[in-house]
Length: 466
Image 1 (spheres, rainbow, N blue to C red):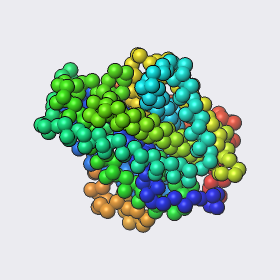
Image 2: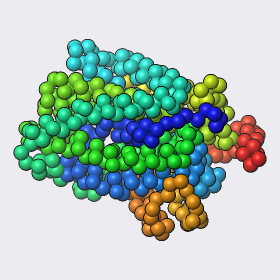
Image 3: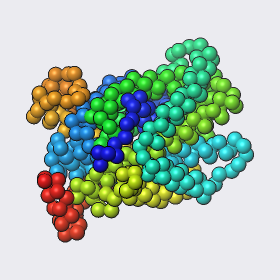
């Protein structure tokens, strides 16, 4: 498949990462209303150093060490062995059936708001049709190949920046007391530790996705060099984006409408970026933000379909998942079967989300379940990287984090502890994700011993050894 590799520029990779991880920042409104302005600021300050940097740098180092399609699955398998690789791939695969639907729902929510601005009512059935149409469109784009996605990501990223920058300028023009950006420190109904835990859970989810482009690094020319560089460029852009986009707007509106911070969120009737733009800049800025939110969410949906389809395809090619997922487009080399199946499951989940409007936010539920499932492959990434540093301390790589091996391993322990703490802080919904992740144990037995009587597993492993 070497001839099918695509030449993607470093900035193209960086923009794909920015869109996937931050997507303009849409959705982080929930963080403010859930934990309070002060904890929101602390989260934004802490997450880059204790989560984003170690996770993104670890992803960059491992993508340099193992430049193959499959991302987290390949890293865990090569670093920790067959069982750990399967656990990582299985959990990531399960998450892959939730994540695209999450962003289809978020996109449909912004489009619903756009339609409401012109007096058009969008009911549950229409909401579902929007989700389904979006998933189908981006499934087709993914089948066309990664070059198309890279070009779209670059354009969408810059378009999304425009209304946010104008909103920030308007926010500072309306603000008199900078302390309003962090007042109150936490939500009055939570202890500091509870608020911090919730902040970490939501903050970590909004800083996931650095590894998605690595899932397709085998399709990129010089992927072992281009992908790590793109990831590194994206880190400061994303950190600054999250901090600037939401905090000034919260402060300005808090001064204009005391106590309004508690109403920030993505649910109906809450203060979203769209509402904030209406308050700070009027109708034209509101329309621009609705358009930006729709575009960003669409792009994230597109890239998550890409990432998860490549993981599932790689998982299947290794003999550890259903054979059908390994089927590719003959002309484009894209994992067409995985793309279609992921899209079909996402459409089915969208039906549930559409008819759950008005109850607990389906977006929030999907986020917390996906975050808990995602903990397994994330923690295995860090452990795999630590083992590589310990077992092969002098390993030469195209990219290697410039830290001494012992110090680097200690640093990688921090995000593992933070992730576990964040999940335990809201175990009610996170528990669903944990239980889904634990299905890796019977699934491993099924695919190794039962699926096609174990012959598919043996055949693929023998081919790989040759």
